[in-house]
Length: 147
Image 1 (cartoon, one colour):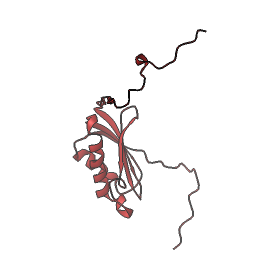
Image 2 (cartoon, one colour):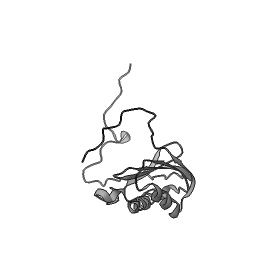
Image 3 (cartoon, helix red, strand yellow):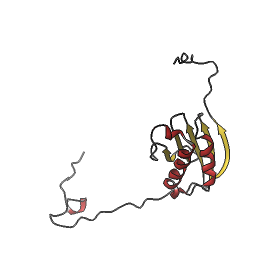
């Protein structure tokens, strides 16, 4: 094998001379256009988390009641869920999402209001599916709480 000359020269991007201005080149971000997506609403007793993905499952954006500024028991309220939807739609505004299929998981207070807020904020809802995991006599539940 022949040896190559690896000395820095002007042709192979040597460091600029001291005091010379450095030109910073920024790449132009290309925003994908995703007209149809999936909205996943996870409504627990403690929080509401909403994620919007493209049809392949790649996440476009997400938000939760805690991120939106709610603390403690206020995170599980229907009002918090509607604020989460508003926050999320401002995050994904560049993708031009127009239609979503909604998948709801959990039994929290933000279930219904999150779906209503998605529709009220200009998204066309194609379908609603409940994907709450239900055990078919799987794990033994914890013992009853005694107060």
